[in-house]
Amino acid sequence: MSKRRATAKRVEIDHAGHCIGIKDCRFFLHTQVGNAYRVSTVGDYRPLGHKRPLGLPADSFYETMVFRTSPQQEVTDCECRAVADWNELTCERYATEAAARAGHAAMVRKYARRAAAK
Image (cartoon, rainbow, N blue to C red):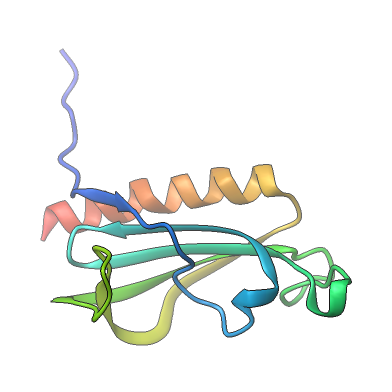
């Protein structure tokens, strides 16, 4: 018989969770994991209509960042928790949307287990 790991509640949010240039990003995923973590993926950055990488390497068109959050809700009408520290816990970059979706899902699973263990 296999053991199931405990995981924290996950809430999908319908707006981006990070990125100062989000108005120029055409892709985002944002998941609140328990009260402890925000997993945010953005990409397809197109300032002035031209696709640009989000950083290095040159094919980094998508990125996932994880931030620690506080139990306090942000002053919005969603279930976001306030970010306790904007220094990301981790950052991964990807070349494709498919890789970004898979990377986001992997980060959500990882941090849901961490949040449940607290």
